[in-house]
Length: 131
Image (cartoon, rainbow, N blue to C red; front, side, top):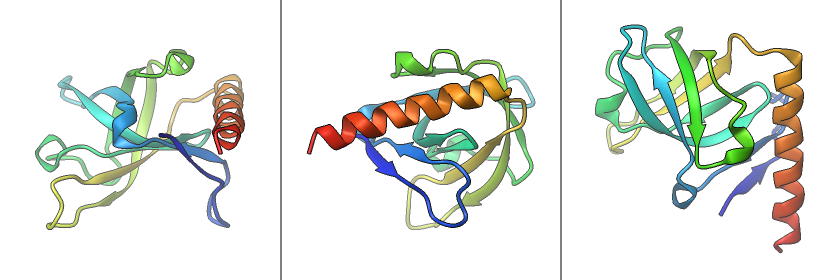
C-alpha cells in the first residue's frame, strides 16, 4: 500500500511513499556503466529515495551521479527515463541490511516536474479515497 507524505518545512515538493509490497523499482546506471535495480521508497518532483541492499550501494557517496534509466512497477512513471540523479544523502545503519539514498534530479525539465507533481496529486487523492 502506498503512503502519502505531505512533507515538512524542509520539503519543497509533496511526495508519495511506496511500501516494499508495491515493488516499485528504478533501474539505474552507475558512472562505470553497471546497471542495478533499486527499490524506490518515495518520489516527488524534487527527487526520489532508493532503498538498496548494502552490497548494491558499495562505492556510492554523497555527490555520486547516477542515471535513472527507467522505473518499473508504475506505468504512470514510464516517462521518467534518462534522467541524471545526484545522491544528496545516505543513511547507512549497520543494524539494517539496506541503506537509504536520497537523490535529487540533476536533469529534470519543468514539464517533467509538473508530470511528477500530477502523479503525486493523483496518487494522494486515490490514497485518501481508500480510507
